[in-house]
Image: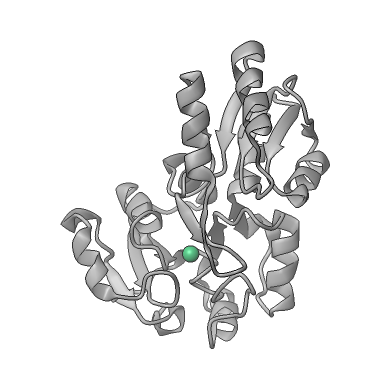
Length: 261
Ligand SMILES: [Mg+2]
């Protein structure tokens, strides 16, 4: 494997093991050794259970050293996308921490159909009434529908299979005949915003993730090199055979610490 000077790194399953954010063994030392060796690294995550500020603090408390400007979540991207459209209010179908974050970023969280935007995230208290409020905001008030990502399922903190934001966004799209703006990975726009300011061709960038299907296929479509690590949700290297040859990961390693960056 050649050396890459620019890395995009997924967080969960890649540098930390799970929702308790325990680092992958050796990952803190490996990550912190990148900058002194002249390797640029940015973190990219679809995490929707913490606010970006909280997750940043958690990672720093685990020992990872990085600037907030090298850190992109689907929620930081949602704020960027809302600002570009001059949106000032949002009905967020998401955890209270997400609403607090929006408020701090100047986007007022509202709990009625007058919102200028709807944001689909992870809301374990979701009801039929809330869904109807979102539909009414879109149909009657022209609210713009955003979703943090289109993931179908995830394993929740009780280790149960749980429905993710994707099916909720799909239901709202179907009910309103609209298309949601997708904020996180593997959207092309998300990756382009994450590599902004890096003055290198996409082929010089290595995207590293435990998800060879969504994350790595999305990065590869943009021309990046991709590396699958087997520390997360997908651990059987044979799974790569289900992916079209041109979209398969360039490299497979047991752990990020094995990447000779
Ligand atoms: Mg992951």
